Amino acid sequence: SCKKDQQDFTKNMKIIECPRDAMQGIKEFIPTKKKIDYINQLLSVGFDTIDFGSFVSPTAIPQLKDTAEVLKGLDLTNTSSKLLSIIANLRGAIDACNFEEINYLGFPLSVSEEFQKRNTNKSITEALKTVEEIHDLALKNNKELVVYISMAFGNPYGENYHPDIVAELTEKLHKLGVGIIAFSDTIGVSDPLNITPLFSTLISEYPTIEFGAHFHTTPDKWEEKIDAAYKNGCKRFDATIKGYGGCPMANNKLIGNIPTEKLITYFTEDLELNKQELYKALTLTSSISN
Image (cartoon, rainbow, N blue to C red):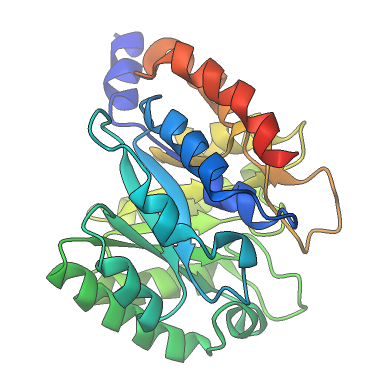
């Protein structure tokens, strides 16, 4: 019976594969054709969603200046995966909405005023107003907004941090009608002690919201993070193959994203993924990062 319950639960599991997060920190420009080939391979694996690109200023993230061109090269005819694009302002959201292939718009909202200004050139209050505008735009264009609450487990700038701040932002997003919120461990400080109460409390209080986890981790800590979130109700996990990408501010080169292949081993055979196509993607990943 317990095994059946776990299988029923994991049928609703969602893995969000994030090549965008992996690529954006690579300084040498990755040829557009190589990006297209790589993401097309990811589309054949069976991930719920591919976080494939970003409609932001090319000055801010030069690596992703070809997102529109990459999108045009993607083969979406034989995939169940949906596409997510990160945007940082209304202009980026408008650009993304020009493409009907995109299903989700992802917006970064922080518990840190400093990080919000660095990331989107807005205060938190201004960013919430932008969230409202983007949410309305998304609805009109048959898309869904995903809000990433960054610094959800700690603040590196010495500003006040408390889980109540995350809860307050969640309540404000709930009132705006946001249906998907991902808690982001921007600097790799999450652990079972702060993961457990955040997910267990807010998932219980907001049953209409789909909560996700975007963890950054050292190689020895990924499992305890996934375990804590999963056992407290989280069914949506962001990851990148081989753990590329992660935390430019963490001051620890070992901190990266949750490795997709590790995440899959945690859930063993309960995830419906094409393992052969996943192996091909694993092989291709090295060529993207070199």
